[in-house]
Every structure is written in structure tokens, then in C-alpha cells.
Image 1 (cartoon, rainbow, N blue to C red):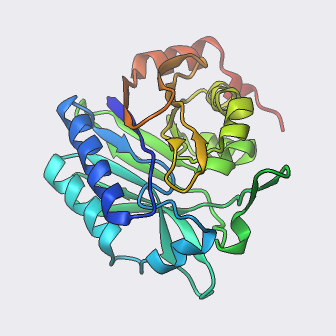
Image 2 (image 1 turned 120 degrees about the vertical axis):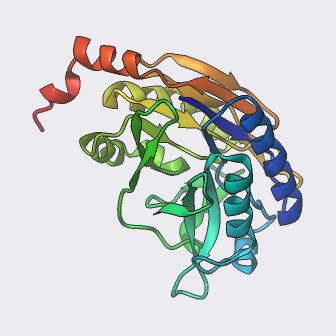
Length: 271
């Protein structure tokens, strides 16, 4: 199955981002991709953390949800929109939500980011917990590919990547592919992004597809990019350092089976 991570450099204006996302989705569809995954905050990256509150949507209704459903239906794609601000009971916060759309335009899965990023080294300061309410449960979905194989896909977002227990839960549920839509800062991405992605692939013997924000944003923020596809042996199959683009590659069921048979590490787990 051919998959793609869509790298963006999102701006505060939602409509501009949706236009860019549509163009990238069309490029992916033209390349024969079946599953296309957008990065965290693809629909808007504001100048302030509170900017996302004005763009919150109710479940099942909203500009971004309509966009994703329509694109999936018109392009015949599985689309993972990671992420958009979803309303919650706290009026001062939102959920950072991933939604999965099947090619018929139906929303088939939702995951709310569990781990919230906080980082302060003097020059940069982030605290997602101030405006985001955390989710509580891991989520997987099943994707029947055109070849007839059904893939089990585990969902996560950005800072989740630093918590291997989440991905172990996905592995225990039978995940073949782990998705990590992200907006890593340039500082943390340069240090840890590839290292962590490859580790999650190796320890869970699964493909990892990680679309990211990548570049200099209109607000002055700088994100690391390097969207990539990693195979279950830890090899990087495709990557784009910076700028908007489509990072495409193929998932090989035989390769996945070979890795798991030759080194059945998941079966050897004790703790």
C-alpha cells in the first residue's frame, strides 16, 4: 500500500492552509497513494496559543471537518487530518484532535492527543496544557487496502512520540503502521525527531509515518520538518527536510512479516 506524509508550513489563516492541504492531497492521489496524513495544526498555526480557541469545531460539524470529508470523497483517499481544535466542556481549552476519513467521506476514527508539550529553555516557551485538554485513550483503526490486506493503524500526535508505552499499546493491539502527525520545534526536532521515530519503529516492529510542519512560519516560529516514512527495521525510506511537499512510500506486508519472523521481539516481551 502506498502512503504519504504531507509536510506543510501552516500560517494563521485557515483558508490558506486548507488550499495548500488540498493541493498536496491532490498530488498524493495522483501518485497512487491510498493513505495521506496531514501534520499537526495543519489547518492553522496562530501567533498565540489562544488563537486556536476561535477556530474550535463541534464534533461532526465545521469547516475543517467538511473539508476533510469532501477531499476524501472526491479524491478517493483515506485521509488523516492531524490535527484540528475540537470543542470540549472547558470554554478556555480545546482538544487537539486527529480525525480519520475513509474514501467515502465518512469519519471512522478520532484520537485526542494525550501528552501535552511543555518546554522552556529561555528563548522558547511552550505550554499546551494552558489551552488544550488532554485525551485519555489510545485509538487504532482498520484500513482495508486495495490489495485486499487490512492494515491496523495506531494514532498519535507529536509529543506522544516521547512516551513509548503508548506505542506498545498499539503494538499489543496489532498495529502495523504508527502515525505521528507533528509540529516539532526546530530545537527539539534537531536533537530527537529521527532518533525517536526510528526507535518507535524498531521496538514495535511497525512502519512509522510522520508528517510534520517544516519551515519558517509567518508568525516567526520555526519547525523542524523532516517528515518521513520509517520501515520496521528502522530504515528511513523517504524524507523531506523542509518546505511543503509529499513524502510518499510503500508499505510492504512481506517485509513486515519477515522482520517479525526473523526477530520475534514482540513475542519475547516479559514486562
